[in-house]
Length: 106
Image 1 (cartoon, rainbow, N blue to C red):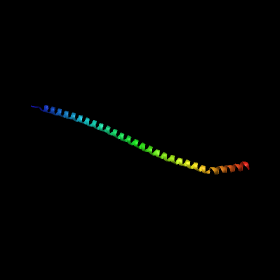
Image 2 (image 1 turned 135 degrees about the vertical axis):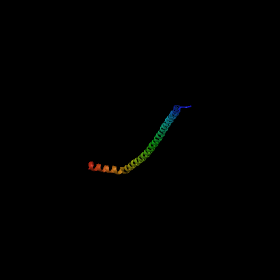
Image 3 (image 1 turned 60 degrees about the vertical axis):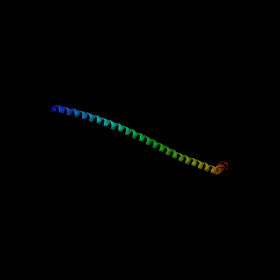
Image 4 (image 1 turned 30 degrees about the vertical axis):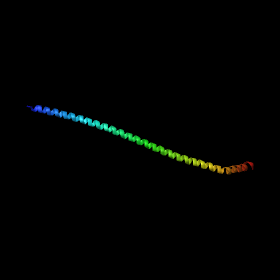
């Protein structure tokens, strides 16, 4: 025959075991959450790094395109200036000779 104290003792042991098991499960759940959080952060960082690299590549490509356009415009401007100078060379030489003759030979 079990006494009341024996029954309480059994109940206390069962309660202690349940509490211990609940603590273990709680710790495991926390570890799982922390692990999944770390994995999620890692994935987010990797995606952010990848997107940042894409943005940089896009901006570099765009800057190179803009630079090429500027270079083409510069080459056109230089060609136009050279062409204008070539066309006006005879007139400029003639004007210079006239001024020289007028100022120094007259």
